[in-house]
Amino acid sequence: MLITVLTACSSRDDHDHPNLKTGADLFNHHCAECHGEEGTGKLVSQTPANILTRRSRDGIAKYITTSVNPQREMPVFSTMPYSEAIAIASHLLILQQLYEATPNNMKKPQVLMIAP
Image (cartoon, rainbow, N blue to C red; front, top):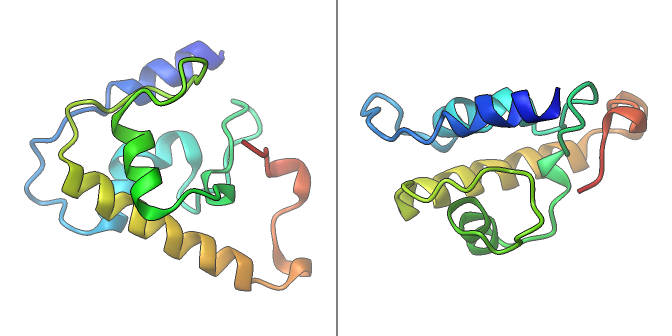
């Protein structure tokens, strides 16, 4: 099942989408299918919550576009323009801030948060 999900995600390495301009739009197009719209991951597919990352904005963009970890299961979006990866990374960091500002009793249960 995990392989199927990752294959579906990898098919989103298309960048002919002039109507997608914001980091949120780009995140929803390329990332939300696997990581969820809020970046909290998906328990069923064992997809990590990418809002738990401790990478910088540039570190996230590099992770998206290059194979920095040969054991990773996430596809590499090697044809993604760096500016697009930066916009996605910026949006992801906003999601992270929103999650961290959410009171603990309103956050998703930890069982749904799969640490990377």
